[in-house]
Length: 285
Image 1: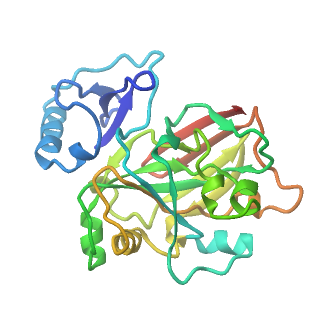
Image 2: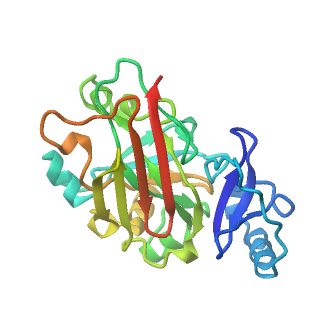
């Protein structure tokens, strides 16, 4: 299923995108798209049954904002340097174990919302990423099969980054990762059953119409199953937690001088096979 949330920011309601591309209202069946829903097989079954029976009313899409597809995001765990080609372009040694950092849940915005270039920013960068959405509580998972069984779904995540803040201002990466609006998510949360092989997804990103990233999750150093298994050794993952799994080659940081970092007025579009497409206009904070 393709689950999403529509409406003004802070007042979104749950919806479903059916096989014909029509938006269907879920507010009569579930309260929201969140971790509680993803952990409730009975509620998910009610949605499937209503969709199959043609019982879900269509939504008028005119002027309808698409918000983040997940309410009540818990934590956003991010995996750095997780593509062989991205490590090569930045001159970094591929890590022996996954690099973990965090983004705050309040960085999440909708897939078409405006993204703000931080004040004093000179190196705001783009990163298309596959996001894992956890569907079952995960602790000390012992195998890749067990890890995949704890995945509720997948979405597109735009891990916007400010590279000077991240790499040149001391301390951890967090200063360059947690600026306001720095994690557009969506448009859909696609349930795991619709993504039989998360290591066979193409990822693409354009800046002002120019293709910048054109990669595949097959290039991941640590695949989806290993990422979930590994992270569960260090923290408990709960339904509604998100894991950003890294970005392929093609970021501004990896280009020769003068590196084309983002400025107000730029437009970024990104897509992942089967997960939809995003578009953000950038403006000054």
